[in-house]
Image (cartoon, rainbow, N blue to C red; front, side, top):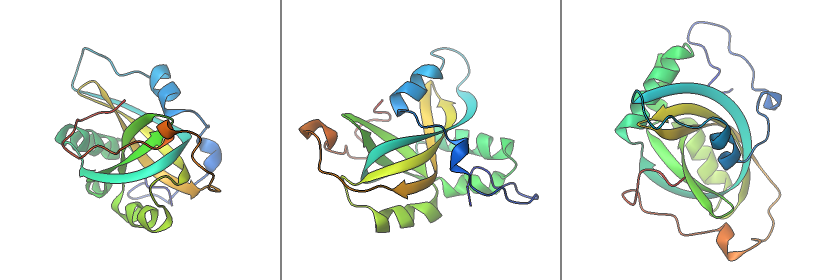
Length: 168
């Protein structure tokens, strides 16, 4: 079941990977940038899939991100789902680390299935922007065949939770 497509009162839409075109996280964020000025929250609700390396460092979601999640889950008809996005984890795309919100039920499976450096295809939702910075949420994932790291920059040190709000 797809977390982002789980309406509160309606029949649950089955997960369909075809609804998530493959893209690099950096490309997706360039196509749909966050406004530098304007309101503190901007909803986007755009789906895409990205191949990344799991790092798995965790931190509590920043307050602005949690507020955006509340707005997003209300918009998609499942306001109760916002509470599931309390934690964020790190992933790396090339040398670029990113924090992604992971729903609690899915986080346990990711932690069981992956070790730091493992390749994974994440089905993501670009939820929107909080205070001018992107917020991404994991909807589903697929563990990929594991390959050797291609370079020293492919797996970099995961920052501690207090090291900075955004890494993009």
